[in-house]
Picture (tube, helix red, strand yellow):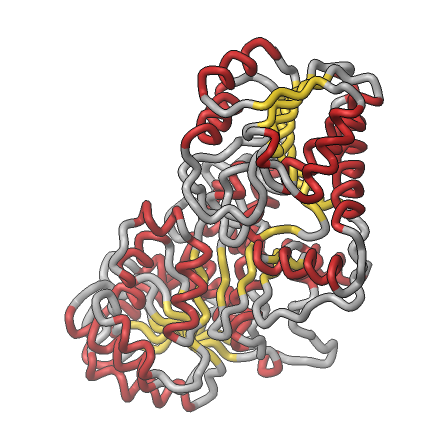
Length: 520
């Protein structure tokens, strides 16, 4: 599914009105009618209400007036609270308000908090329609609107948000001070990025996209796009697998990982490379740990690095480059490497000098804390970074809470600034590419919040890189398979207690199911 920013949606609307000559009032009427139809069907069990429409002074309020009129005409008990003086309503919204008033509907204009609280309490609504603020919100919600949002959230009523929950920023999902928590959001024409990107996505409830009569032809072209990665999108990214192929046909992944006490990370990432469909995986490990990996790993090839240390050293670099030159198509660097200073130096040199497509994860990311500008010295070779919010916090020097409040914008800007593919983990994982394109992953659940889960993800992405996918596609498909494996396990066992090793076994199932979806 394609998602748009608030600015892009405004351009689509403007083009429909100015170039295609579709009256704005007609689009508003279509939007209100489509939303009213869903409300009547979805909440038929609570007919005739009472129902409360809370409308702002802009076009979102105009949609609310249409909804109020149609539902009232259908027999619902509707009261409309307008958070503005009547003379401040203009344009198409004023037209829809006038029609509503001509029908002698119950419309009340409010401009201060005490009267709003009184009217809200007296209404005793079973259902509230949020038509306060639209997708173009750019300033923090204050004053009367904040009071209205607080009243909505404190009530026990069902809440339907029109186009977007009021207070959610449409372009990136930030919460502008406060936001309505909706049970159902009815978005018009296109999904907005703020509806799919956290934290905004947490306020949406069920989401439906409603057509309002804007043709798909002759739309503006945008330089930047955002996609929602669902099964349909992910299926299109699966690498081909010829029936006559052999293990050499499906890529050779190299993994540089592991240190004393962290051998599990290296093993999980390596095995995940094979589970992705790669034909061969070689783990280059510290020589002092090789005996452990000989026992721990069966299908993964292991190569002990010289010097018999239990950590990666700068003296191992040329040895790694020689192994890579012998046939690796991609490299995973970082899981369980530790933070020994020699290891940190080796990681930085491998990243800046290697010519392989690479996934940088875990301690590989931590090696660039405070020196993130070094990433820019890598030339044109694809680099995928896979931080969780804590690792991203160390990379950019920003508190985790600030990152979580502005995930979309920060992830996109980092990918552009450093010319990398950035996969920012979390509920609704984000994948951003150097050109500023972004994908939002839809698979996964809380079962992924367990030790080793990220190591599996890094190996999956590395294996897909080795099979020839672009860095952006490998990260996107890897994230989806990773989440889908967890969804498969959760459906059978629940979310609690899922182990990273369980994910390894579920990945082929997720891919098989995805291939089936691709054939349908």
